[in-house]
Each structure stands twice: as C-alpha cells, then as structure tokens.
Image 1 (tube, rainbow, N blue to C red):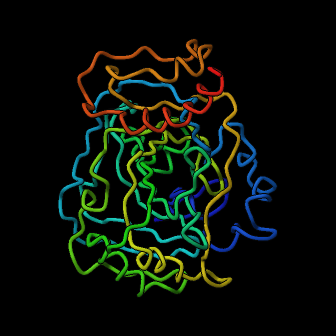
Image 2 (cartoon, helix red, strand yellow):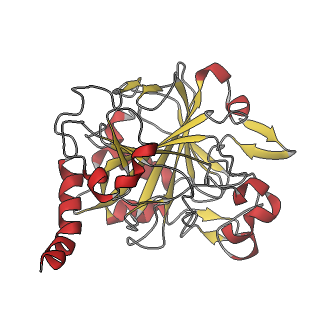
Length: 328
C-alpha cells in the first residue's frame, strides 16, 4: 500500500516512512545529516530518536495498555525488504490494536520493522542512558478514528510506535525462527515473501509489557513527521548473535544494509515519562526537584505490581558514588 505525501510516493512505513527508491539513506550525501535539505520537518524541534536519561524521566502510573489480537495466530503475513529495512505487514482483518496507557483512543496496526547496526554494540535508535542496543523493533499503529495512515499523519496524535530493544543471548529465540527464515528469501531489495506459518505478535515480545518510557516525537526516517506517541518498553527481547546477524545480510541498492538507525536528536523541551506503580520510590523528585511543574497528575492505581525495581536499582548504583563523595 502506498500513500502520497507532498508529491513523494512512500511506503506505508510512514511506515517509519521508508521512501520508495534511494531518496534517503544512512551514509554520504543521502544520510541523516542531509535529510533536512529535502524534508524540512527533519529539522524540527521534536524529532526522534532520543537518549532517555533515567535520572530525568517523570514517574507516572498510567492505565494498563490493552493489546487486542496480539495473541491470535495471524495468516498471510508479508515480509518485505524495502531497501532500508525489513517490513512485516498483515493482510488479515481485523488488524491487531492497542489502547490505554498514554493513548487516547484505539490504534490500529499498520506494520512493523527493524533497525540494527554493523555489530552487536550499536543499532537501536532510542538509547537508554546513552546505551545502544544491537537492534530495535518498531510496531507502527495509526489512530483508528483517522481511518488510514495517510490521514493519521496529518494529526499530532496520528501514530503510535511500540518500540522494543534487543540484547544478546546464548540461545536462539524460537519465536524468531519464522522471521529469520523469511529473511533469507528477501535479501534483495524490494523483494517480498509470505510466511509459511501463522504468526503471533505476543510470541516475539518480552514478558513485561507494563514498564515503558513514553514521549512525543517523530518518524525516524523522512519525512520525519512529528506525529508519533512513542512507547519504549524497558525489558529487552533476547536474541542470539546469529539471529541478529541475518538482518545484516539484507541488501539495498548500494550493498548490504549494515546499519539503518538515525542518530540521536535533541530532546529540547520535551518530557519523557516512565510508567511505574506509584507505591514505589519517586526517584526523579529527589534528583530533579524543579521539574514538578511539568509532572502530570498521577492516577491512583494498583497496576504494575512488581513495577520499577530494576530502574530504581539502576538509579541507586548511579548515585551511590556521588552520595559517598559528598558525605566525605
């Protein structure tokens, strides 16, 4: 499916908006540094990706996210190498949906795609405390009331992207076998294959879907439209090196796609929120007391029990040397 935006034919990657052809890339004169010369919004003030500093996030207890159709086996799943990434789309209706959390209304699945790096030390687009992960998954949804991606990108709340990081494991993740098998049949740009087995979204995601960071940003490829509500889930998906390496065998018109991530953009005046249970320690108020003015009203909720222990431990070990130094 294609849509027309400003006279440029692009895949539904609005679709993280992958453009048909080589109008943009990740190296040289078509790399991210030059996107703004053709696509003005790529120079906007609310661009993605960003670095998420866990000492500056705002704690908030949001309603549970509702995942509809994520555990259903889906037939007729198309896997495409569009020359910039691997794109996974579904033909079956109804498409999976999400609601709740920071979202106002229902959002309908459009497609998912991946970003990766030359090696296992980098590859994700968003970063956590300047840490890059070897790969990142983006699941793109459009707001149902807008009926289509084409209409949704005209509105500041038009899209939401569920983002998942990957980290290395010694063992293969069996739910990814169908994806990696399909990749071997789409190494050439603009090639497509249909998965031979039904596909379930839930099987490829981490177990913990309660803890996540959320902020307002943009598509991470041209035209860089600032219409995305981002949800970055804290728990990574674990894949073997060999599984990630298969993504690096995909080819564009200029050779292997060894890296396809946009550099970090300034966070500017934006606030990143971290969804936690408000019974836990409010670390950000200690660290950044003058940010109360931008803090949303917290909802009384029993959600997310088991909440932010991991993040608070990270915080504790981050500030412990500072506390000891100040004490002495």
